[in-house]
Image (cartoon, helix red, strand yellow):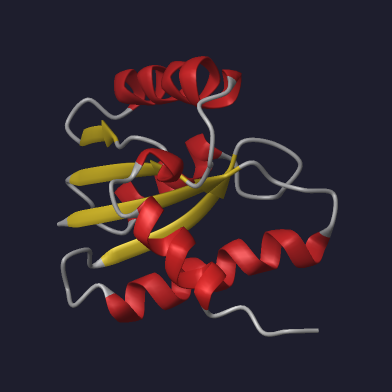
Length: 124
């Protein structure tokens, strides 16, 4: 069973973390069964850390997990921290395939999204 783990930075501001949780719920409803499990997780400053999110996916029956960093830039967290955490989790869950997707900002569709979003901006 395939899982998607949406990883954000995490915030001291509960509303920011709740937005990521809500986005994960929306993704689950919109992915047309491509991922039967969709969960949020955070790098820091929030309740569900990345290892906890991976463990929850495994507990839900995931045999393959795609970890998607919900980050716009390839800073230290994306380049070093998240891959190191994923590597450690792979040893804890050897029978589960865990793949790390590129960060969201690297997506080919990002340019189109930025243009579409800017075009839809309303005058204030």
